Length: 422
Figure 1 (cartoon, helix red, strand yellow):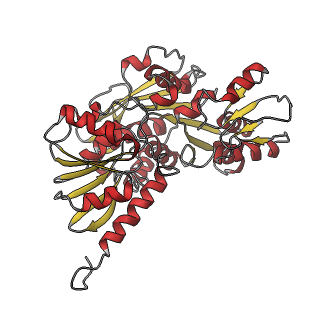
Figure 2: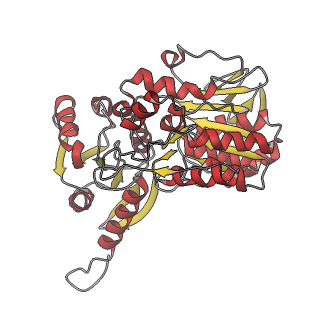
């Protein structure tokens, strides 16, 4: 049984059938769990967006049906085909690091980026799969990549997992089956998140400061195991967080035996992921930046660091049990105004008033109202970096980002009193 009719659910059905198995696709009826056929199944693939509290889990437990994820099917097919698998997880930087590694090693990027692992494992003509894995995907999965990367871990998705400890535990599941022949690459992972880490893998640490036995930056060069790889100036992606992403990618590439010339070429041609600190354009005398992919506080702060001049920050959406005091504690003084939107607007305002009572806060219902309010600000730059999920108003962060771009474009071509367009 495949439960959930999203991208991963449909991919799992196709993969099972392509491998000669039988699969039945199920989903909630009008938001209610319904299973009328009375059949028992060998296993149930539960889509990653379905919370652990959902009735399908109780049904499977009562009927002794093992619950797995679409990623398990993908990994099984990859093993059958003899593909090398690299797994990437973390709170932020997963997509950038996944794509960087794919470029560095000549692999196929798949997983949480929107290309199901089971589909990629069946169809790719490449010998390496580079899989982005979310905490939702890892909740059900039992995976064994040859190289596992944890880019960083910060508070996120507490509403889904129930606690920050359980969120950390899901991230660590990427390493639970690693052996002495495998590699575990660690970026900014706090010690408390590693309390339950138990692995036989060779651990490689990445640090923007120094990591003599791992990947680091030293004297303007990316280095690995004490040797220079290439100058940091060759990295096309901007920001300190992308330096850290590149270190994780370089470490993975060196574990695969990639030579420095190929690494230099890939870093110099890298481009940002859509909706990740993406410059939209100039309208009404302001620069507009789309960071809809910034769905947690850590990502929002990283985006702020990459902006210039005074800032109008648009945040909000559906909270993930987020503590917004983490955003306003030490917030960059260049932020002149915050526009809080959606379901989380009041929580954002409450945290801001408590920690930064002098900061101008504007509450709006949704994104369109937020853009219009931002257009009236005196800031030089408007940054959409919501620190929240999009599900109160949009299907996903990409839809939110596209709507933001459309709204900004409408502002840019709004007729003035003399018929001119700005």
